[in-house]
Length: 237
Image (tube, rainbow, N blue to C red; front, side, top):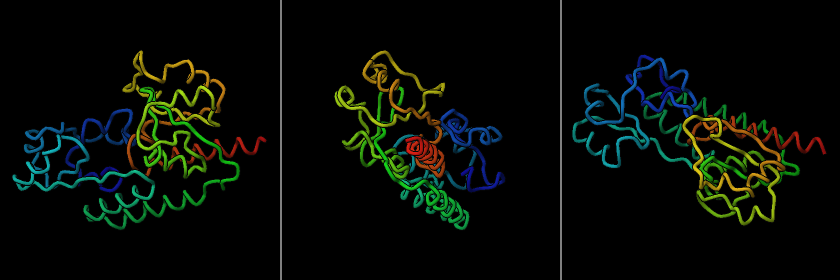
């Protein structure tokens, strides 16, 4: 919404819009905030409610009974599906050309990425000890950067400590480590000595959690950073 619409069309934003994992958090601070609570939203009487997950699974049907239209932002698990979602949302908001501009800019940035020569594998790590496997948005991000995903199983999983004990990834990408909202509990796999050793010896790239928190055009920031790190490693050989 912040990317596509002028301020005059934005009545309020979620409180999450100003948190560390929000890419446009600085811009979002200029807007009224409203909690994803039915009573608060009804009081505002918006012409349209744009949501992802806030308010619970039945909130859309509730608002529709009150004749308050809801635009559901689709789930994206690849760079290509991000572009599809952006265009759908832009069309629904009546700014289809702006959506095309964003998608076009993404394609330009993708085409400018360094050519994949040597590649190598990369392990994505969060403070909670979770990594994205095959079929996740993180997997698509890693592949676009010209790398292979160290986690070869599908979906979101705990860090593969058994594999890490005998095989080292070429690169490790850490995300959310600098965010105040992300904490590693005592039993997190991210605290395991095996991973600590890998972080100390493999090439490490720190990604902003705001670039990987969800599917958006901003994932290109993370992809470019990974591709650049890969390129610098190859040129130093």
